[in-house]
Image (cartoon, rainbow, N blue to C red; front, side):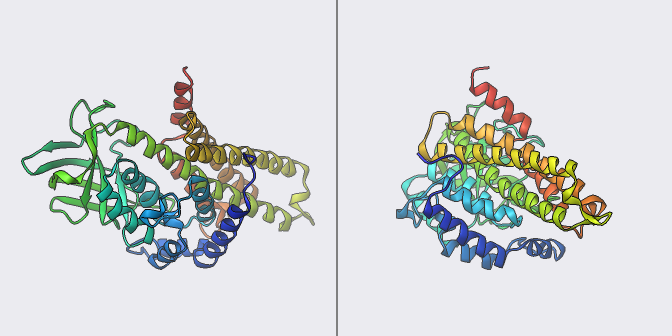
Length: 381
C-alpha cells in the first residue's frame, strides 16, 4: 500500500491535467466574475461539459454507466484542484452526494438512466437533505405519504447545494417515526419541474451556490423511490461520509493555495528595507502552518482511500478528516489575512476569499465539533 502522502504515477498525471484545466478555465477571477455578475447558473456550463468529457464527473462510477471505474482517491485529486481556485461546479452536489445515493440505493434502471447522465454532464442532480440550521443527519420532518399511485411529499429543505440548476432532486423524507429518529427515512427522485416544487436560489457568503426547497403536495410515482422506503438510514450515512471526505479534499486545495499565496507575499513584501519573510516570528508561524497542512493532507488521503477499500474504520477516518480540514482551513484563512496585514481584509485582495470559504465549508455536512463527537462515538466513547 502506498504512503498516505504519496500519489501513484497515474494519480500525479491526473493532478497535472486537472491543475492545467482549472487554472486556465476557472481561475479565482472567474469565481469573482460569476459572483459579481450574479450569473443565473453561478457556474460555467462550458467548463462542466469539458470536465465531463475528460471523465471527471464519472470518476467514482462503473464503466457500464459511462464512468471511469476509479475511486474517491482520484476524485479527491480533482476536487483539491477545484478547491485551489474556489471553482463553483456541481461536483460535490451532483456527483458525490446525489450520485452516491443513486449508485448505492437505485435500481438497475435508475442507475442506468441517471448515472450515465451525471457522467457525461448532461444531467445535474442535487441532494436535498438538510432541514435545520445546524447539521443533524436524522432531523427530517419532511413527510412522504403513500398514495394509490405512489407518494405525496410535503415539507421544506434548506442548503440544497446547486438545487437551482438541478433537473432532478434526490430528496430525503420520512415515512414513519419522529423527526429525530434514525429509522423511517426514505430517498425519492423528484423532477425539479414537478407540480408543487418550489425552488429559491441562495448564494452563500463564499460564492457557493445553494437553494431552498419547498414541496407542497408533490405527487410522484412508486418507481421514484430509491431503495425500500423506511430503510434509507444506512445509505444516508454512506452518502454523507462520501460527501464529507470529498469536501475535505476540496478544502485541502483551499488550504494549500492560501498557504502558497501567503508564502509568496512574505517573500515579496518589504518592510523597513527588508523582506518580511526574513522575520523570525513570521518564519515560525509559516512553519507551524505548514505542519498543520501536511497533517491534514495525510488524514484526508487516508480517509479517501479507506472509502475506496471499504474499510470498517472508514466512517471514523472521514470524521477525523472533516474535523481536521475544518480546523486547518479556518487557521489558513485567518493566518493568511493576518500575515497579509490590513490589505488582507479587503475584497480586492484574494486571500480573504479563502477565509469565507473556510467558514462556509466547515458548516457544510457537519462542523469540526460535530465530527469530533462522531469520531469519539464511533470509537466507543
